[in-house]
Image (cartoon, rainbow, N blue to C red; front, side, top):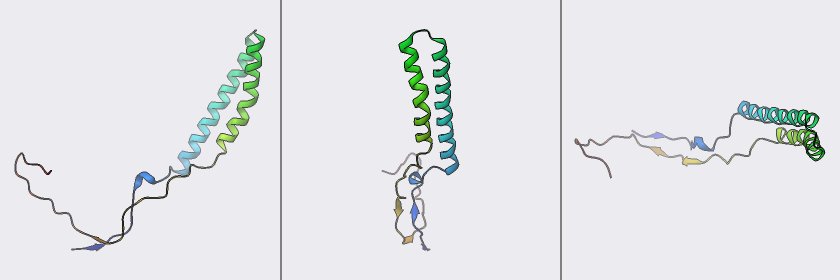
Length: 104
């Protein structure tokens, strides 16, 4: 018995779901803002001027970088890979193996 097969697409070439993509971007943005707040608080606490300046620069630059990263487009996944062309499918009939035998 043969049936007409549709194109079979490999699941490994499918992009992530949109909700997962948005959740990942949100987490990265929140992490960046937490690091920015830590830089700002440490800038107020640490007495050393060179370190304060470096933390201030970090607190100013991090938001711009975080916005660029969060607004970047979705990853360009590979085109779906066709595993098998349209054609005839055959029914799988397992072979009978004796005790202790295996296919090579």
